[in-house]
Each structure stands twice: as C-alpha cells, then as structure tokens.
Amino acid sequence: MRINDTSQSPGLSRPSKPQEPHGAVALRTVKNGDTLSHIVRQEAQSRGVQLNNAQEFRSVMALAKDHGIANPNRIFIGQQLNIASLHARWADPAGEVMAQKTNTSGLATNTVQPPAPSTQAVLTAKTASAAPAHPVLRQTLDRAVARGFIPPNEKQDVYNKILQVAGKHKFSPDDFAQLTLMESDGMNPQATNQRCHGIIQFCDGPARGAASVGFGHAPRAIQSLSVYQQLHLVDTYFDKVGLNKQGQVPLDELYLAVLQPAARAETRPEAPLGIPGNQAHALYEGRNPQSSITRNSILQGLVQNTMDRLGNFGQNLSNALPNRLQAQRSAEYRAVDNVDNVQR
Image 1 (cartoon, rainbow, N blue to C red):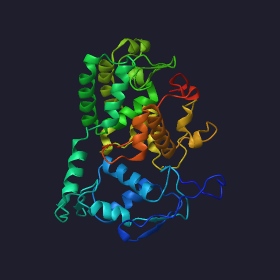
Image 2: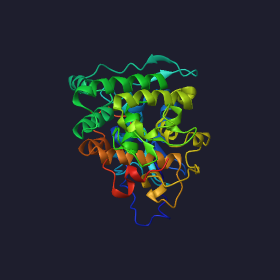
Image 3: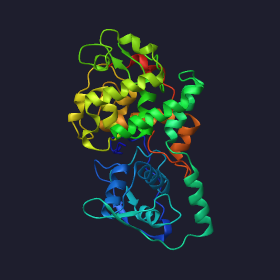
Image 4: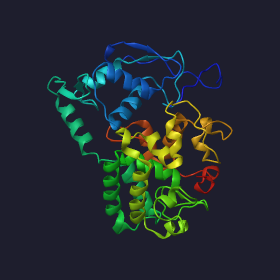
C-alpha cells in the first residue's frame, strides 16, 4: 500500500477528519514509508497482539473505514490517524480480533479476557465463525469452474491439493489464488504467452520453470495437463526454489518466487527489483511500465487485480464486510494486462 504525497498529487483530496471511535483518541502521524498494513503490524506488536493475515487485513480495512479513507492504498504524509480504534477493536469481544498476548519470544502466553459478551456480540461472533475459510481461493475456484478451467467434479480435489501444497510450503491458500489470478486468469491450465505456460506460467529455457519440473524438452505439453496435475508441478517447483526456507511466506515473496526467484534477494519494500521484460502493467509503480517494479507495487497490483477479477466479491472485500474471512486480494485482465503480454 503506497503512500501518496499530496505535494506530488494535487488531484487527490485528503480524507475527512478521522472519527474518534469509543470517544478515545490516540493519534499517529503518517510518515514517509508508512502503509496502513505497516501501521497495523507495528501497533499490534507494541501491544503484544498476535494477528494472522486475515485479522491484519480486517484491521487495515476497519482503520481505513474509521477515517473515511476510500482507497486503503492511498494515505498521506502528515495525515493523522486515531489508532485508538485499533486498540478498541482488539480488546472488544464482539470485534474481529480476539487478541493474544505474546512474550518476547513471540509465543502466545495468554488470551486477553474481556468482559462477558452481550447477546449481540455472541451472534456476531457466530456469524463470523460461520464464514468459510479461504474465501479468495473458493471464489477463484468457483470462477475457474464457471469458465471451464476446472471440471466441476475435480474442484474439491483441486482445493484439497492447494491446501496440501500451501501447508507444505507455508503460504496462504488465498495468496496462491491471487497469484493464479494474475498469472493465468485464475487457474487456466492452457494459459500461455507462447514462452510460459500453465497456471503459474512455467517458462521455456534451461534452468527455468518448465525445465525445473521435467518439461524442459516439451514445455508446451504442460498445457495439456489438468489443473490438478499442474499442482503437482507447482509443488515440485516450489521445492526447487526453496520457498519455505524463511518460515511463513508472505504474498510478495510467493509471487516473486514465480516471477523471478533471484529478485527475492532485495527485501526492501520500495526498492526497484530490476525485473526485465514486459510485465503486466498492474505490477509497476503507478501501473506505469516506464516505472519500476517493487515489492510494494507487486502487492498493490495483486490486490487490485484480485478485487477486479472477482467482481462483486472483490467489492465486498474492499469494503471489509465483517463476515468475510479474507487475507488478501485480485479481476478481468484489461487488454493491456492480459496474461499473453506477461513475460517470464
């Protein structure tokens, strides 16, 4: 989520004055390099609160809503945020997050014991718990079935296989769905740009994706495999690139493992990654192919792409509806961003 300095973006208006939830005020001024996600993580860490990906995302979207920020990707240097809303959310038994205190080793030691919840709080909690796990993945699979990418009788097998691979390599199943929405229009096994093929775009050439999974001499044959069969190749590929060596894999790291594994050596979020070739416009800063690709721009592009591709669900995602258990985000490729234009 990139910050926009209004001195450089005169056409952007500042959000309205932040509300003061629960009457509490604890102001934080946005600095250069801040993002809403970064602020949420820092505040959680400072208060000993342990958040998973879905909880972090919901907190980001709630913070944006509290301050009238229509686009969470756009916050402004000097903007003041009332972070008391985060603290109240984490302590409120009816809230999205049941906070866990952590010790200095990062291990959970005790759960915050709030007052007994009201009847409405219990109903809210039950509604939230009834929401399906991995909603982005589920929506992506439904879309893939509707488009003929996956036979209906294979959808559950594909879902189970993705959970297995995600558990092994320590990434979010929803993040993998976002990756495929960018790479192959959401698990199209026949997707190709003539040099790269399949659901994550295995590329031609020595020591590249197709060769690493045993298709170096016949890379186009990957297109004849089903999504389920290609997921076995995905598992092998992630083994080869050492995806899970650093613990839980975030979305940008997962995507870079596919886009250009060597670029993972640059860990600074705003540093140019030096990725050659013509990539999807959404991946560049400001969607401008003359600009650089950074970890931040990759995240922003994947988020927008997910919200665009998943249509109404993506809109619900951006509005942070409380009953959606959602970790991250991506919609129809615009012609300029079609997978056929993506180079690997």
